[in-house]
Image (cartoon, rainbow, N blue to C red; front, side, top):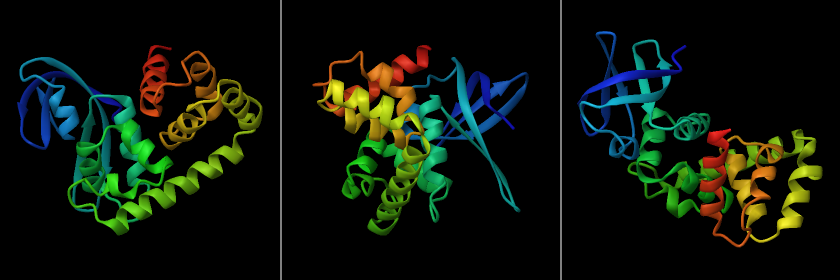
Length: 200
């Protein structure tokens, strides 16, 4: 329903940002990482997610589309609600979340406040399963994704897998990854790919 809000940042707390648009203040719950990127009184754009429950409507806002997409991916896991999603993304960047899932790094996910081992295991298990299904469904994976990975070698296959966690298909990211130095750390490959795709 609401894709984004753009306006003056009129108020901030430790967990939300209020953006005034045409005289209406939208209270967006958000992450610590997003709050670090905002300045009170400045013009801001937040990508939003509206969570509708029987007893409440909650608006969540994020500084980047990637952070929003990662939030939606996290809350698609059974037992992971919006608060848990915010907690994970307050502790980790989208790239770090993708890496943790791709490498079965449960310990990193449990760094988030209120996220125990069981929830972290469920996040890794369910999202890895979704990733595997997406790879099978993507007919071009073998032709393009695996081809680029083989040609480039290095950390490209891991980057393709991690970007899959964020919802990007191998056919989307392989052309970009093919232009990057495959010896770069996986996190840098992910970050540079996301940056380039954001420009397209």
